[in-house]
Length: 229
Image (tube, rainbow, N blue to C red; front, side, top):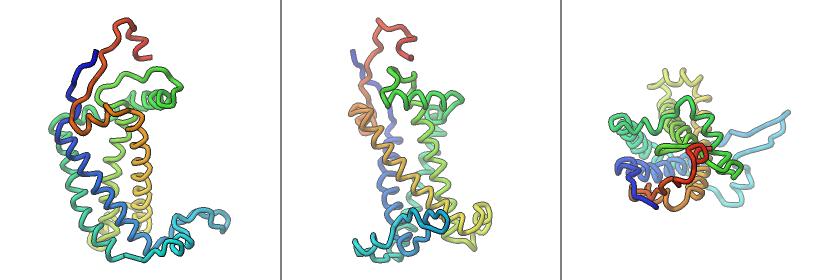
């Protein structure tokens, strides 16, 4: 028998859905900025093996260097992104939602078991509260990444005014590299997140929209060991 349970508060849902378009605009505008100067590539013994946007890409799609447009959007939306993130963290602290989000000492082991379950190698997933161990690690990491993006972004946006930030990140060049690497991290997280949402099913997605989830009561014929194996 299924029962309706309250899963996500309205504030968490609002912060989640507001953050999605904000982050999308930040990544898009960041790419416009990067296209104006794209030095990053992977080289071995003097030979370029990987260039994120090779010359044929610019030639084929007639990419124009829209630096001013990218900077205008990036610098405008970064404040909205920062404010939304700050309010989200503040709400989780005040409401106590942080207890469901932060990993504990068992999370790394349980996260591996969650992965094995998602790969259909393990029959049962570990017992969880609102989020499983893999989600807790991933969501906490994204918060840290957001802070990292904000600080490195300020360092490369105002390197004179925030010279102490530039020094913390090892100089302007390394601050820019970290900022770029974090952007790649967001893109990878987005892909993994979408796959996880699909695997979790409609009930999980609906909970992030409505706040409620239909939950199956445990089968009383199973032992507690069998339910958590």
